[in-house]
Image (cartoon, rainbow, N blue to C red):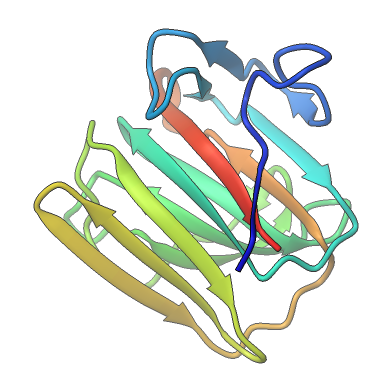
Length: 177
């Protein structure tokens, strides 16, 4: 698979090409590699639609609570998401449905993700399933969503809703062509 990089600070402004709601920013001091997108947990999000059916996405993410990646969505945000949830105790990192950029469900199964740790996520799509493979220092997890049928080609990074003092960082975002 060819990797098409879409780095945070490429041309035309810090978040060029993304539709932004709330206050996602660029953090020049954090990332693998730096810079990273910084998403507060106050419902802030950034979405885009390249009008391409990608074979998947890859990114590194570190969260102090919750961070969502919406995918296969229509232009209103209805589709699916993969959540990193670091709260443990019945709160899973995994897949859930979305109904808009501001409304989503919670995973009912998955794994417990570590807090304040960089996690490499590779999300790939097959004919009827989506798979998330996650690796971090000291851990690995994989979850599958089946059946999977996209509602569109839009995707989004969402800071979720734990509050403005909870942050997530996204680095090295790539589309898998």
